[in-house]
Length: 111
Image (cartoon, rainbow, N blue to C red; front, side):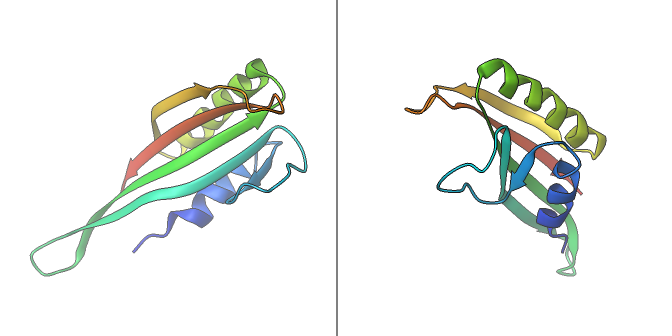
């Protein structure tokens, strides 16, 4: 079974932003990229062997401004697409109380 967390981390860490699998209580720096694996479903053949896997990765981008978070999303989409992940959803969320802009995006891949 393929475990996508390491692959996704290695893809995103090449960008010049702070990357983590968990959102901290307080951001060390902005922009920040937080990701999680929302789906890692296996599809079995008749011999009970893994035939394929469906992956869904959720990525949240935090930045000081909406325009900066959008720029980061463009970079994230490009590197994820280069690694065969397709962006299937993105949403520009309402800024939090401290004014931090957030974009939530979903990427899918079948292997």
